[in-house]
Amino acid sequence: MYSLNENTLMQTSKKNPFSMSPDPQLFYFSAQHVACLQTLESAIRLRSGLSVVLGDVGTGKTTVGRILMRLFQDKPDYMFRLILDPQFVDELEFLAHLSRLFDIKTKANSVLEYKEALQSFLYFKGVNEKKIPVLIIDEGQKINEPMMEIIRGLLNYETNESKLIQVVIFAQLEFADRIRLMPNFMDRISAAYVLQAFDEQELYHMIGHRLRRSGYEDLYHVFTKSALKQIYEYSHGFPRKAINLCHQAYLAKISEQLGIIDEDLLTRNIRRKEVSHV
Ligand SMILES: Nc1ncnc2c1ncn2[C@@H]1O[C@H](COP(=O)(O)OP(=O)(O)O)[C@@H](O)[C@H]1O
Ligand SMILES: [Mg+2]
Image 1: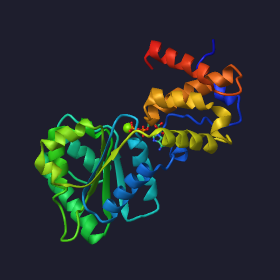
Image 2: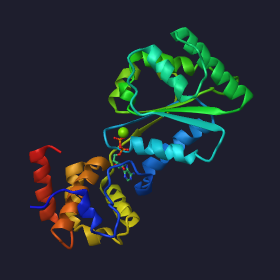
Image 3: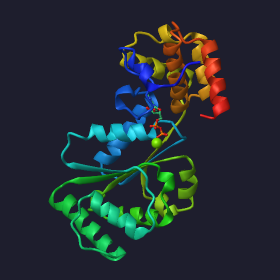
Image 4: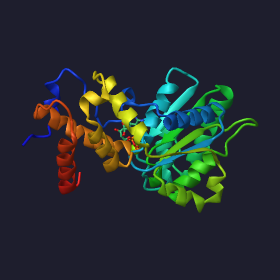
């Protein structure tokens, strides 16, 4: 029996192709991910306000958010700020967090005072300094209603041509049900994109891309065709699920010193996952 251990990877000269972190280096620019990024990029450039990206767990939302921030990293006019876990006890805590995030110097200690401080900040940045603050919120399904109201309020600040803050929310699909019940919030959405699971070919392209990026030559030197098929069937094309399985099979391949990942190795790993629910 082999042990699942990151040290095993150290014994090879190659990089781990199946790292689970949202690493832009390993990102495969599929048609839908590119379209999503283009949608967000132009919404931000046009300063149209609120964009929402929806997708099931593990479809690439967090990674797309990182790549989006990278696309703008050399552009000093944009001030990107990220909230990874939007859970706040109340409005005051959320407003205080926003003020800190944007380095707003304020003595505010009530909701009203914070709102005023944010408003003056946004006008000053947008009108006097021509800067574009961009707030990225991940795990948007955790945003509660009072927070939604504050975000909606921020989006009210505008000049004749554009909004003074750009907001991009990445959320799981259930967020759509929530916003449907809030027509005022719905109205503010200027761009929306839904990330789907990959189809079979796209999934193989993604796995092949990760392998090449990590120093391997060819997908079919690492996986047999039937092993790949099993990965698709098991993951239904969801990147996280597929990568997770590939990762386990890859570690097993190294520690068992196998030449290729075949159906048998995968079946054993899928069974193990089913038993241990990972
Ligand atoms: N297009 C892609 N190319 C390579 N890896 C991807 C791609 N999309 C998602 N992944 C990988 O899938 C996993 C889940 O992605 P993540 O961005 O965390 O999804 P989500 O935020 O939607 O749950 C990560 O390991 C990520 O690197
Ligand atoms: Mg995520």
